[in-house]
Structure formats: C-alpha cells, structure tokens
Amino acid sequence: TMAAATEALSRVADVEIDDSGVFKYVLVRVRAAGGPGKDVVRGHGWAEYHADIYEQTARELAQQGLGCECLGGGRLSHRPEERKIHVYGYSVGFGRADHSVTTEKLKAEYPDYEITWADEGY
Image 1 (tube, rainbow, N blue to C red):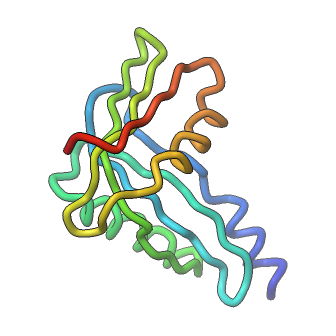
Image 2: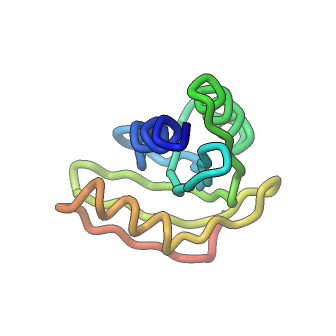
C-alpha cells in the first residue's frame, strides 16, 4: 500500500556517515514504489569506490521494498573535534553530487556543526 511505502521511506535515515575522517559519499534518491521519494546521504571510509557505498545502500533499501538511484558523489571531511564537515569533490562513476543538497541534509543532522562545501577538489 501507499501508506506502507511511505512508512518504509520515513524509516530510512537521511544521513549515515562515519564519525570522523575523510571519506567518499554518495547522494541517493530513495523511492517508494510509485510513491514519494527523498534524498539521503551515505558516506563511509571502508569504501574504495563510490559504487561500493551505493551498492550496499541499494541492497539495504531493496530489502525494505524501496528503490533508489545515485544522484552523484563526492567526499566528506568530518572533523568532530572541531565540529566541522566539509563537502567537496566528485565521483568518477556517478558524477558530482549537488553538494548544496548534501550540506542541507548534514545541517539538519548536525545542527551545532559548521558545514561548508566547494565544487573543487577530488
């Protein structure tokens, strides 16, 4: 049902990133079948490639009956001791994510942080 799909979507965290370090991230549009969608940020240091993060995310979402597409990628520099996150760079495979969207998502999740972004850098 549409209600079930919307509920599944609401359970998907907007942001899941590592606690610290510099790592790759992807911006993913998650969709309930035939229903609403939302964009989420996933960033992890274990990933050698942006696709590694996207594929794991897609698998997890599929188990909940949700589809997704990758909107692009980049890098995050997360410095918790300074309460700073910097969003930059791009993904060779997926292209550059809209870092301004990512920044808004991060600001909601880390309201006491200074969050900046730039299009340059790899």
